[in-house]
Image (cartoon, rainbow, N blue to C red; front, side):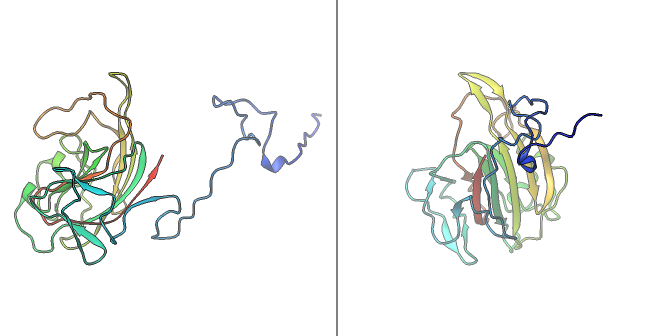
Length: 243
């Protein structure tokens, strides 16, 4: 009969189990513990970087001229596109991350197709997750809200009515380059209002309008950019956790 093996502090793990590719044993008691992150319901995680909380536009810049951004603060702790001012982006830059963004299309409906509630969330400044009012408003599939613009349509359309807030939760794995060579492409998972739009989808390169995408080497971090497409789209409660 094999003897019963009892290890000191066995509840913390084992040292006589097979070794994983990480170099640790299965159930290794010496493997580092995870940091504690407090995540209360509907609250910002305790280790998140808050990019916009409605109090100011500090930390954002106008992509057109580099000066303080020209978007405006509005009620409900939100900011609103000022058409013609141009896109805005964070002064901070990020690579792989968990991103939370809330947006709202205008309650007063104007236009149709791509001309209705159009904006975009650009990861690393060049990979767009589309923002559009697609409530009873069809357009080309890879330009639909929740889509990886010009590349991959969302699995479903879970947009809310105009004038209601929508929630993006995005998991982003940044592309990796070795000099000019692509080592691994970008991968994204997107939820819109709690509904999966993309699950671990590989991007074909930065998103473009009416052209085929393709990768060119770039920095391992970039800004979060929000688009001025001429519509009065609002954003609020923007935070990020670097991965």
